[in-house]
Length: 147
Image 1: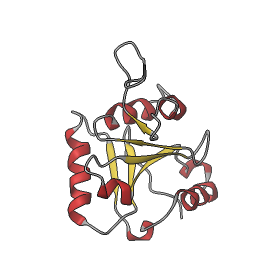
Image 2: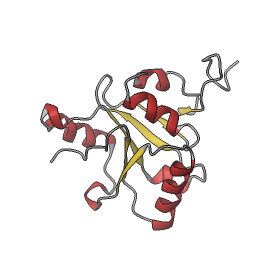
Image 3: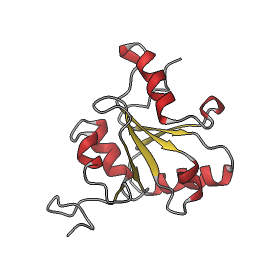
């Protein structure tokens, strides 16, 4: 079965941790509050409980080309348990399986740029800090938090 498709000009946020409904609500609220426009398509289906990146890659690889998506964001156990709710961004196309984390603060920027193909997944993944988290660019395009 193919992965769910995001709505037009939004990014798929797939829930994989179902231990705390309040945490899921908090993740959605944080993402919705981070930007003015709608930028996420939320999917909360129990068939994805505990699923890992490799399983999602296999499912995506088996889908018809018209049903494939390029990237997604996972709301996994780390997302649900960390107060900053960092989503796990997953590349499904150029470098399948490459990941980085992103907090709600930067999600709208990444979602917008990826959904219109203004920037590539690697642009953000390459800018992740030592913990594997993207923390943004300054007005000159330099990575924040890096000297």
